[in-house]
Image (cartoon, one colour):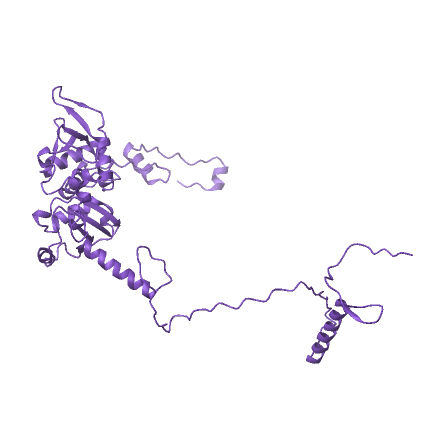
Length: 394
């Protein structure tokens, strides 16, 4: 009930309001509506284990094509060409180990270096040594001993075999040497002067620019997509010239024109440029000769030819004749006069008069008058300024 102020001053007071009991639910709702209330904590989100994120760097899948590359890279280390080549046989001899059959253990002693290695004893190479070779180390992704063993076991090789503990590999003794490869193959030459291995070498430019950087990839691609004849297999060696081209040494002769042309008609591998090494050498020499004719000033090695008289093209400059030798300089020196800006001549007449005056002064310095009044030439008169003071005698 409202009581006016005048009545409150006289002592009349407003009756107190009755207390209302609030429930707990009303308090909670009031706190939630107020600005000072704490936010309600939401329940944690459930994460499905099947959709969990993986590692930041994923490991690429190991495909059968990658295992083929590993197998081709290993086979290139044990070919007949590698055993007779100086660098290849030296690499093998440093890493070969001998297996003692009686004691069934491996003697970790390197064999002495020889031009060719005999298979009378069981010689093997550890897989860790193969990992260091460029044929394998340049492959991506980086390989391991387990992958090397897996490549030999799963892909299958008629040339290679593993030891009992599967950590050593060797070439099968029954496959070495090939019956058509002579023991001194690097010294054998035919009637045309072509060596034994050059008769079996081809030049390739693959469809990608960086394929030849890894010899194992070149060998695997040729073997899988090249439709090579059986007599040309196995591939003996791959020599990289640049990242885009290489020489590939086959087992069979490629100098037979009919067989070679028949294989080239297949156009395999696709988008590859392939020719024999003899044809590549011939084309290279022809190109260098034409280049020497067009630009005789270039220094080209391994090209011998006579000077060719060729008319000058409109784009080429005529030869510059040697200039005549300049006359020897005289020892006479002329004194330079410092001219002020005020004395600078302004017209052609002043320039002519100034030159005449300068010439007369030069003649006056270079001539002298004797006692009889005749002029005489003074030789060796130096006009350089001197710092010495002149002494006069009384």
